[in-house]
Amino acid sequence: MNCQEIEKLMLLEQSGEGTPEDAGTIEQHVASCTACQRYRDELAAILSLAEAAEPSDGPAPGVIAAIEEEAARRATRVIRFPRPALQWLAYAAAAALLVGGWLLLTRNAERVNDPTRMVHQGAQPAGNPMSSMETAADVSVLVAMLADETDSDMVEDIEMAEDREQAIKVLARQLLRLQGINTDEDLLADDLFQPDLSAFPPTHVSAPVTS
Amino acid sequence: MDMPDQELLDLYRQGDTGAIGVLVERHRRPLYGFILKSTEGRTDADEIFQETWFRALRRIDSYKHQNFRAWLMRIARNLIIDRARRKKPVASLDAETEDGQTMAESIPGPARAPAEEARDHELGDRIARAVADLPDDQREVFLMRTQADMSFKDVAETQGVSVNTALARMHYAIGKLRAVLQDEYEQLGR
Ligand SMILES: [Zn+2]
Image 1 (spheres, each protein chain N blue to C red):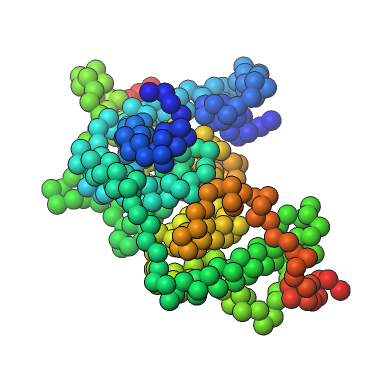
Image 2 (image 1 turned 30 degrees about the vertical axis):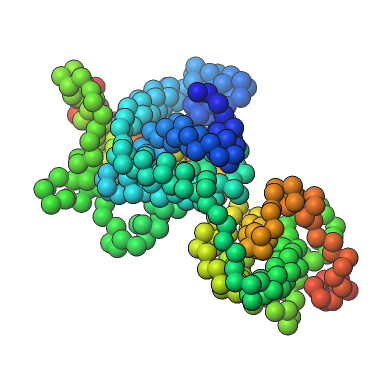
């Protein structure tokens, strides 16, 4: 192992992510390398200076109070439903999304060990209305408009999502919630929420790959 | 008092609003430290701290992360990036304020015994300025490690990169800070 690798092991050790084997490797190396001895000393000095500079106070007391007020307000919030005339639109959008969203997902799936997903990987459905919507976030804006519920929280949740799959789950959950359907986590648990790809003819997803 | 974050979140979801107060206090110093050192003074930092929690409260239903602090950091980081984009040109911590101080100087330092630690204090300031001058990615890693004591795994998750990349960024950052330290030691005749 070269010095740079040893230095990175030291960083991991310092963060508590090193293994006992790493510790042994470091000790063995440092015993005969003055450059790495020095690195270790200076690393310790830098980190202690940086940690000592942590502010002990702040934010202003009013900020903490505002957060606690907001927490109390949210806890008692009543969920608002969209106007009845628009509810069926939201339903339709939800259905389209659950289908279209999964197509988007499977189209971009990276789990090559799943043969069902592999078949559809890289497919570019032509004429599919969903294909013009590149991201789940685009879709979420559309749906929020349909539901007359331009809830920026929803769009933010989509943006914060870990990946496309999570984004679509968040979106689906939001849509169901708009309909007044209680969405506990079990309902959208991974195994219950897997798409049944056999329901979609292969031509709909991908002509070139399946042939 | 040592109730895990997840249990406090569950309590809040069940209507115990006081649970949030415990969480705010628990993560206050690391979160605020990270924000303060990534922004331009306490007014900005207070705003971002508040908005971080407001957003967290909005999303608490869909929160599923294992590490709550890392999640808060990620929200704060997004807010800091947004703000930096909106403010152009981005004022550096070395830019002078109206009263002729640099931003880095105007950020109040920690209370210390002045006489015998004057040298350390100066050195601490030099390191703080060098940290402020680091490229964004490297500064983030450095602050998440030193202010928030986040693991490289959590830092990597927050930045959306591999652990190796986060580690390499920290390694670069330390390399630059070592140069400052060595420079200082030379001046002191060590
Ligand atoms: Zn070495």
